[in-house]
Amino acid sequence: MPPKDQVFKIITDLQALAQALGDVADLKEAAARAKADLDSINQTRAQAEAQLRNTKAGLSNAQIENQRRFEQEVFVKQGELKGLAERIDGLRMQARELADEVASKGAQLSAINNSLADARRKLAS
Image 1 (cartoon, rainbow, N blue to C red):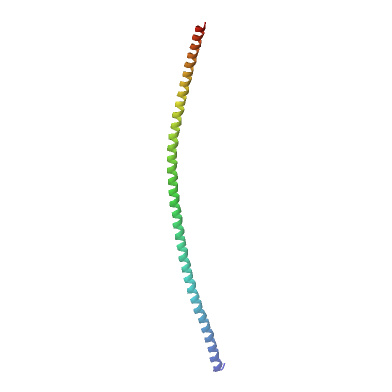
Image 2: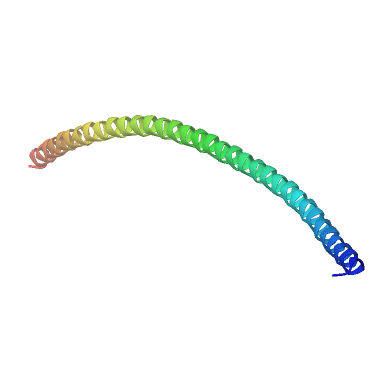
């Protein structure tokens, strides 16, 4: 091969190599951009996960507080229920006593009416 052709081939090879190296530089730049994008995405994901954990913790705290309030209200209502049940029992006992007293007084009234009726009959005779 004549030296002129060899020089031309070397120049062509060098141009192809320069073009390939230029493409490699573009690849390195694209890889750097992709790495930066990936880092940004990972940072955003980490922030979102942290926010999710905080939200879950907030919900857990709210749930715990709601459960505590509920149990406190149930305790108070149980106390009120016990007080009302005792009051009902007392009123029932009082009603039984009054019913017994009314029955006793009714029997006394009936006896008095019978005595009056007997006395009127005796006076009428």
